[in-house]
Image 1 (cartoon, helix red, strand yellow):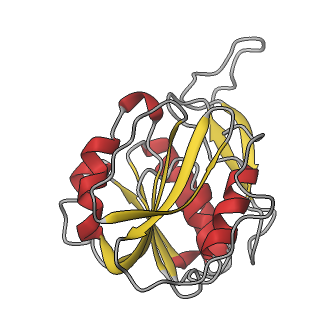
Image 2: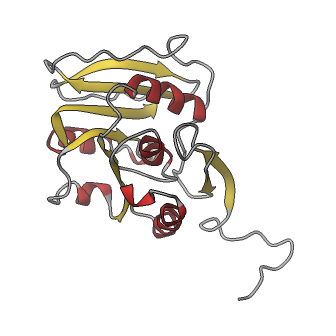
Length: 217
């Protein structure tokens, strides 16, 4: 294998510019590479901690969908904290390879299935149904919320939970069947947890200190 020339930057598609870590559960401390790819913007530690505090009562045994997996931080965090399984959908082949290599190394990593597919196309397959929790955090520049969110009704169970992350200034509209349960904000991002309007209430704790206001995604 040829070594890169000293001083010459590697291609953006393969250069790792940072890492995020899993912050709770059995895989706590596991580090995930964050390569330099357009639109890849992992959810921050602080936002993930708030989100999983919200989900704590319903996470054990849940079947989880991470629709735009990227680094895998949301889907893997869910399994680490007790979800029964997670499907991580990602279209970038380098990210898919990295996620599959990582889950192969983790004890119990077979609970996470990495699917190499375009999220919109995958939602039309028979596999895209029966999930208890779904994370929808697409690349912000692509503006996919209006395309994807109406299709989440068939992906989730009647008592399912839907997490959405979007730019602070974005006007995201969900179908009327989704009711806001919790939300928070950072300097750049609004993140929110929804469930179906009229679903039986579950007791979920508010995040410590209320909405987040200082983290960056």
